[in-house]
Image 1 (cartoon, rainbow, N blue to C red):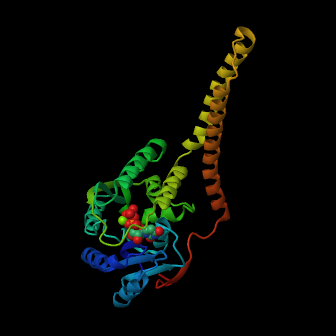
Image 2 (image 1 turned 90 degrees about the horizontal axis):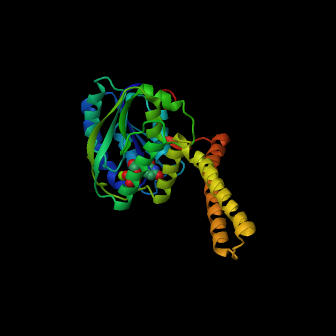
Image 3 (image 1 turned 180 degrees about the vertical axis):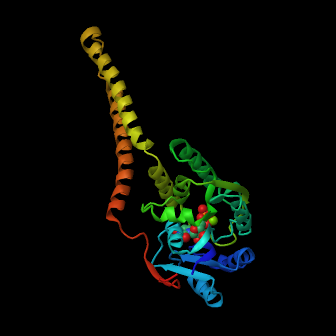
Length: 312
Ligand code: UDP
Ligand code: MG
């Protein structure tokens, strides 16, 4: 059955947050429309998250859930939610209450001015490490510089959007999801509201640095070919410099004859060229690994169980 409003909530070890989150989201969403669903995607949590979600589902039929067979990652969890949701308007929110659920009402109101996407842009972020905030800041700015798509700065996936956008996303089968980029790519009318990001209500972040780096590389490789071109630029640059050095070497050897056993210059040249080659191969490797993942066409996620029927 189609709903007016769906809220997608990815869950990875959030047992302490599910209760308070449910209360706050339910209140906001209930006031907005009686035709709503809260779609929890349990991304392989190892705590009591799933049990708590199932308990909510027993008490409230607006609670739907999808339970993954293992941890597939935040972007994939949201993607599964997008695939399964039925709302006309779809909101995405983190489970840790860093994104205040009350903003869903403000974003929805803004939508009524004729926007298909309203996202929430972070003015400040509290309770996160300096390193995380700083790397995120640098990342968003670099990404904006090197991509042709206008991916909004300092914006996560906390947003509300129209069904039209979700239909576009469903036709983007790439394996490496960078949803905020894909949504920006889709176009339509998009706008934002600003907010101060709260601290995590409880528990700890599920985004390890390893996951963050992979996510950042997915964003860059998914939306820019500039790094690949860097390999070419670097190749030309190094070849140019090497050409000049060889001219000088020939001159020193045959004309001025003041050559010395040039260990230093030799080792520097070898190291420099070796470095550039390795970087270039690495960049190519990042793209090729993603190409090969897309050619394998494995399903993005495996659902172990769910209370969402096939008919909807
Ligand atoms: N999450 C997930 N799978 C993961 C990591 C995180 O579904 O592998 C969920 C998590 O439960 C939360 C949201 O994604 O609802 C954002 O994660 P988190 O708060 O850990 O990231 P941070 O805010 O620190 O960037
Ligand atoms: Mg968080």
